[in-house]
Length: 429
Ligand SMILES: Cc1ncc(COP(=O)(O)O)c(C=O)c1O
Image (cartoon, rainbow, N blue to C red):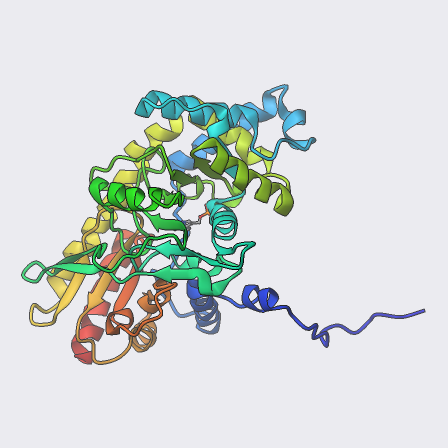
């Protein structure tokens, strides 16, 4: 009889996909460094402004507690947790989403236009590989990110790394105010017969940028000419979590897949993503999901159905979640305006949404990674910006000049953190 008492020496040969998928991409690699820093510096107080994890707001926690209590007390409970369900999603949630959006935006959706996935990250994985990659005739369909920087998680969604392409933006700079904004560069952006799908976040993680309605329409029309789906990653958009600080209209119809997440509305652990779009696109993604994991867990879906159908989630989003983070942005803006020297070419991206600030240090004499290390030495952790350019392979010094600052610190942490950052910046220039 074999006796397996020794573990740790296995070195299986990995496939190319195995190799790609078992390495950490983008910000996940930095997170490892951050966790090790926090562990090694036990006892040292760090101001950790790296997190993508939303804060737990008491009103939001209470909403999910109430929905859970309601589910527990209902006759539906056994059916929800003791049974498999349909791949497309839990029927009451599909209907709640369709009804809410029909009412809110004057649409004509049926439950067939909605798909529930285990988090929205999986949705981008399905789409990137269903619409992008090699076709049966051997041509490569590209996954186009029209405005770089964008969400670091897109870097790991494709099984054909060569299929991911991102485009440099143009920069709209207000030098006197130390503010700037990225815009898609329509002179460079290529959407053509090789485009499999287009993905962008709106509002954007990491920059807080919100593409204008007109920019979105233009991109969607360019892709429609080639029947390419456009996934609008609305993880921070209205109606939930409504983390937009500028007016924006969600756009629907045609080749647009409106993709949502409940992670920033208090349910990151339950893994709920929602796609709304044309029935044929939804069916393709649903089949992918059946093959991968059968369906999204049903407990989270059942409590989400309650929070959406009652309108409570949309109310809390605009009355609690949005003002909470909007105040944090103002704190960072005011702290930087006060502490940063006027003579240094620093520019904060316009804070139009999401839970981050994005700082560009033009002419920075060192790299983003080096300033990240210096900030750690004064007890402040942010994320080096170069991790947020998935698919942008060309050299561009700007990639090494930015930092992402998470708004998940306390007011005081944000104020002190920005003061220390300004001191390090002064020293470095
Ligand atoms: C822009 C964006 N898209 C997608 C995701 C993934 O979210 P989910 O938890 O729904 O998988 C995140 C998470 O931070 C995000 O910021």
